[in-house]
Image 1 (cartoon, helix red, strand yellow):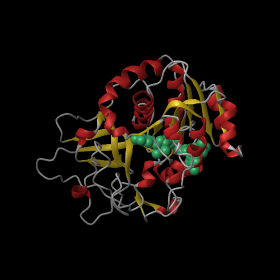
Image 2 (image 1 turned 30 degrees about the horizontal axis):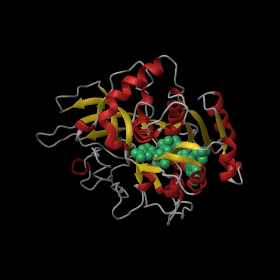
Image 3 (image 1 turned 90 degrees about the vertical axis):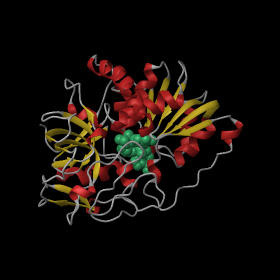
Length: 362
Ligand code: NDP
């Protein structure tokens, strides 16, 4: 059972060498009596920015930090990290955990049977024993690519949905700005904004991404933030009448430039701040007093608190996918061995669309 382990806690930008491949692990199928576990074969793994936060040992973080050579026992709120330490550790090193898609090979749980396809938190390894499978979602729609359950039909999709509709309450004709717009979450937020009749502009870090946003994802405009010397002026150019809704994925200088461009009563969905995750100390953000004078509302959220809306989201998104009314871009890395580089790539903007790792296709 090949696995990817966390080698060291990470300082600054993550490196491939912070993780390592263990190709001599074995899996222990002697489960304790009364176990409700399932044995799964991992198919697709998701690379997500929050995983970097778990690679630092920070007291009081809302994410349980990973332990080098181990997995945490809890992922935020509703996501019980199911790769149980008690079943797996006993002197052995256990892998990094994260969202993925897997196939059930054996089940000690009455709700799961061999052959079921599931999505949820699993291990970065070929096979995992999931000791609390209640947290897994059974995949019902198999006529869409299974990898979509790491993105548009999984956690990032729910993030875009909850963060845009629930936090921003968009209205037709409003002006929407999305940062990290060509990523897993951003590409969907922009399209939800178009479906709501809004005007939407996205920022991304390469020309290729900007072209995709405009030509494939239907954004009204997009720009490469790395080529703009004065982001405040850039935003004025794209939003001469100001921004009603900012979907915040990056933080730092971008937030500082957005604030003077917000309209009265504007809303900011604080989804993430990826530009800050590798810093020892957060950037100071100026212009915060504009929150007062423009009567702005900025609200953070954790997607785990919105999973009660998952069935409603599926009802909306599945037909859109099937009717070809939504564009969804994935960046597929082949093989478990490619996972460390794929994860590191998020922090250099190497991924174009949702970063997925294929462990096996069936
Ligand atoms: P992406 O697929 O967007 O990948 C990350 C992208 O961020 C990179 O491709 C890169 O694109 C951009 N980026 C990296 N470093 C920087 C930087 N220093 N400044 C500006 N942009 C940068 O990731 P996701 O869509 O999965 O996540 C987007 C955001 O949503 C993240 O902040 C994440 O933490 C957050 N999130 C929050 C959740 C919640 O519950 N609140 C749940 C899921 C995600 P580029 O080429 O544009 O630089």
